[in-house]
Each structure stands twice: as C-alpha cells, then as structure tokens.
Image: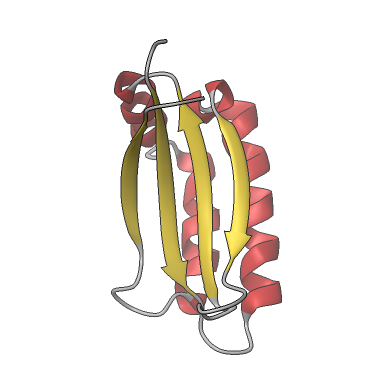
Length: 107
C-alpha cells in the first residue's frame, strides 16, 4: 500500500461567526477544486462537537503524496484565492490556524 497523507488545516473562529466563516470556506474550497492542485485530493470539513469548541474547524485533505500537497499549497498564491483569505481573516482567532500532516498507515 502506498502511503497517503492526511493534511488538516485547523483554525478557531471568533465566537458567533461560524456561519459566515463556513460560507467563505466552502466557496474557497470550490475554487480550490476548480483551479488548483487541491483537485487531486479528497476533502471533508469538521467542527468541534463534544470536548472541543464548535468554533474549532478542521478542513481536511487526503493526498497521495507530500509533493501533491506542496503543489496544492503553492497554488494558493494565485490571485483568485486572495479574496477568500482576505474575507476569512477577520473571523479567525489570531494565532489559531495551522497545518497538521499525518501519514496514513492503514486504509
């Protein structure tokens, strides 16, 4: 089995702004799959439920290689993505966003 990589972008959203933030993230995700290397990944979005704040959001992508993930990230410098990052920025708790990468050991 070739390894796969689970790449999670996690962030905390300002209290009471989850709906607005998720709308932006969904539109951004659609554009990622239209015009970037994120199109080769599988995606799902989750938020805290029990034991974690509902304002904690994980935007998860599964890639077949780290090279694919790096290509997808580098595509985020394209001009069409700037509007989404600027629109989302006011809703993110400063310092809360990060990428975490896991290597899948079983499918």
